[in-house]
Image (cartoon, rainbow, N blue to C red; front, side, top):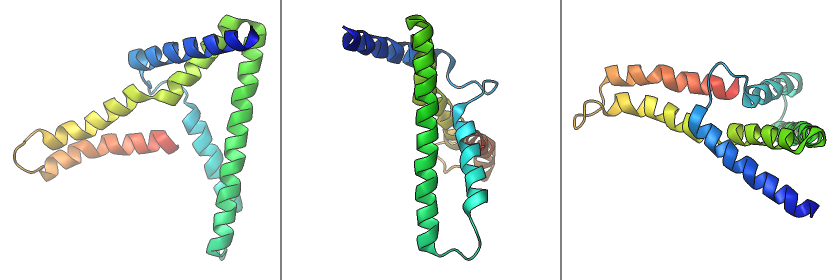
Length: 149
């Protein structure tokens, strides 16, 4: 019965997470795990990258960084979920739904891509003007910073 209950909780969490994503997307004011992960990667890169390392050593360090970051993210996510489900099933579903919302990010990606795309196609059928490209550039830059900062 525990296995069936967990499958049901996962299905509910995914549905709620998808609905949350469609409703609120990725508001700029909310803290975002991807930013924290990007900060961890940046810190590790500063620590590990040395001038003069061969490409082979850089690849090894990059692989070690990837494995370490994935391990940390997995352990933190798993630990939080175990604790939330230990408090109450609804607490676990709530946290898992929020994590699913962050993982999906479909609405935010759609919104961001349209903010870049729309200025570029405003004057169609003529080619995109330099002015339109300049209007699209700040949104592209914001997404890049949001994604990695």
